Image (cartoon, rainbow, N blue to C red):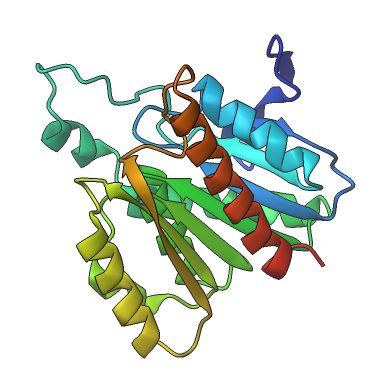
Length: 230
């Protein structure tokens, strides 16, 4: 069962591997990119716009609903510390595996995962398995240096100079750990003057912010072109 989504190119599927998801692009692509949202969920218009653009690059793109209708809302009555207790990105990664299996059953021979903020941790967890071909994470949250020791797939990390959640110092620690983990290729880039959320939650009226987000998307697609698109 699907529903139209207005001006967006894709549609919402209500059961794909057990998950609701926004899907866009051709099912005949043979290669798929899963985009995992930040704390605010898969309904964000900018995230769906990114998905449509990635699909235009030749991928079938799926944005799963991994917060199950309960995104973070900045409500002081429910602080982040309480919200995250029922939204573990590690558990979300496990819930993504049936979706990956369904995609493979539908003919997707190669799958990449792009994660934003909270979704970055989900992508990293999946990179510790052989479920996907490559991952890319943008302004990640909840990722720790020790995660990099377990990564088994090529990983790209895009950070922001003014990101206070994963500041450049931490991103470079990720890079150092990946340098020691010789099992996987990796790419790390810090975007000048970019805050947390720069790749998917930016000010559309700010030309610099729009340009930075576009550059992040292009970098991600190039990474997937290298490892996912056969």
